[in-house]
Length: 109
Image (cartoon, rainbow, N blue to C red):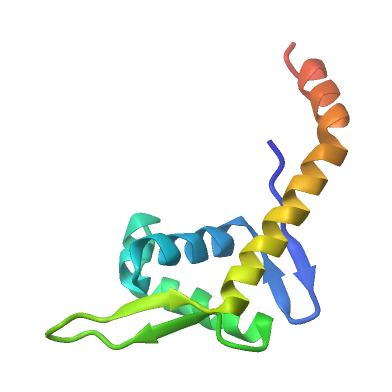
């Protein structure tokens, strides 16, 4: 298994941030996404803020909670961030596969 972290001029993008975006998309809220991933509400919001800065535009459109409850949806920028990361991840995995298999065989002693 290959884990990919991308260092961009505006910040780091890795599996945790992408998992948070995917959880927000699935759960429909930042707090529910954080709970699903075992992170605090503050940590989830801090990561969303970091992603907004990284992308240079909002990646999540959140509406405040309250009596009727809030919610969150990904923006087009958020969906594009996931799609680009997953495409890069797939390409890197394909490129690294022969070396990873060899490494796994050598380390099964």
